[in-house]
Image (cartoon, rainbow, N blue to C red; front, side, top):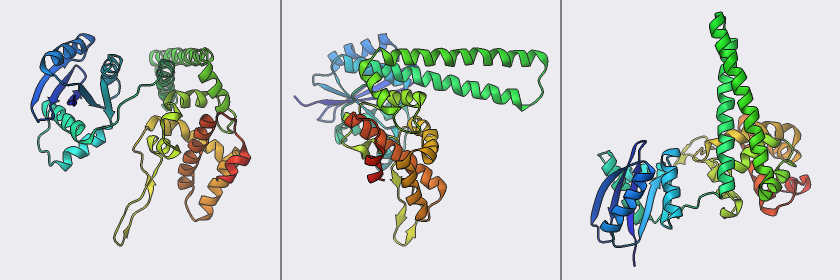
Length: 324
């Protein structure tokens, strides 16, 4: 039995669903973005669709995450695709209208014609770690903002007291989250083993190791390290046409969180990690700038992380120097 394609356009309070059969027949309805709405969707599909549905939605973060988990846990085929793919697909079809109904149908057409790969959620332990590490980074960002405000100028006594109170609260929250993260990792043998491996890399401390484990899915899901580099948006993007030669830059089409996590360890690695030092020296000797070398250092560090997690062996400078 062939599948029918179900496109879902996610909103904060509702989601729009377009069903497209292999023969081109379509149906449309919207539902509240709640657990009751998820159940209504399944009930409606049971009466409206006779074929096995293939659900497809854009990666919209927390607004669509719960629906994706619900459908996957219920045993349905689910694809979660980069919104850029849908946007460019719409452009290729010369789409002139944009609304929720049209967007959901476009996603259904994309699903039917492109057959995107099925989504595999992270294991429960990794999902919890990801949630904790992201919350910690949010708290750290707020803490940095408040510290900047405190140093920005003179404040009256009431405002100063308010800022200091928030600083005290945020510092306590960051400390509590770090404790929870470490306890969570210690409770999971696989995560604990991977963390011990990652901290053997010069420039990677416990906080970075925790965050990397929260943001990198199981490395065995990637066909090779190049896929992981592309996932992080660290693959070089060449821009040239005919006689025109643009500057090659990082694509940045990928996880901005992962790039943020890798930045400071790469800076540190340029000073203390022999494999990254050798790699950056070679780049700079070729006439490239220090910022280009830093982007290369982030990519090289991700190569090292991939190799260590895949082989389950600690960092060995001799091995990685050979590949520098």
